[in-house]
Every structure is written in C-alpha cells, then in structure tokens.
Length: 141
Image: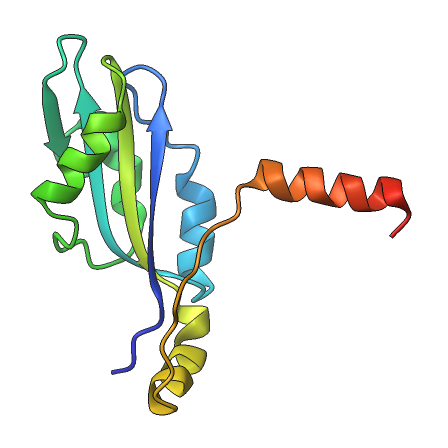
C-alpha cells in the first residue's frame, strides 16, 4: 500500500493540561481523508523536571483524543520523547502527533516511481507567512 508523506508536530500546552480544542479540527482532517493519524504521544514535565508519557486512554482529560481514528502504534520512540521533553519547561505538557498526509500519497508514489528524492522540506511558521503577505500587500504586489 503506498504511503504519503509522514509528518510530526509537537504542540506545547501551558501548565500540565492537555487541551482538547484541537480534537474537532483533527477529526475533520481524518474524516475527510486529508490525514491519517499514525501516533499520538502525550508528554508531561512536572515542576521538578520529571517526565511522564501517556497514551490517550491513560488519563481522563485525554478521553476526547480517543475519538480520533488512527493507528496509534508507537512510531515515536523514547529518543523522540526525550528530545521533546528537553525543550519543555517544567510544569508544562505537549502532545506529539505523527500523521500521514494522505492527500499527497499519489504524488509521493509518483516521486518514488520517478526515482526522485525529496531533498528538504519545512513547515513555514504562520507568523512568517503573515508578515511576508503583509509586506507584499504594503508594496502593492
């Protein structure tokens, strides 16, 4: 089965509370076939700096995440968790979401079939895009 590009994002939450506001928009992306969830890891860093990870079925406040359809199968490993936890401030939390961009599966397969290799890719922060668009508008472009 062809697989589209796989991405991850890390979303940090203030305090040790995982907000479920992101669940409905994620569910829409999954239901529309835009993405497929591959892994979800919740990371909590206590005030003393100790790190704990959770799956969505281990804490009551994570129950809304259980409604997200996908294959949560441990793709993010201990090294990934340590990397994310290192950048977390004590008393904060984060969720790591790994998904397949199913919308790009056909393109990804075509690139592989053509023996193409993606050399680099990056997500451009919204603030930079907004600033660039504002500059273009101000310049009359």
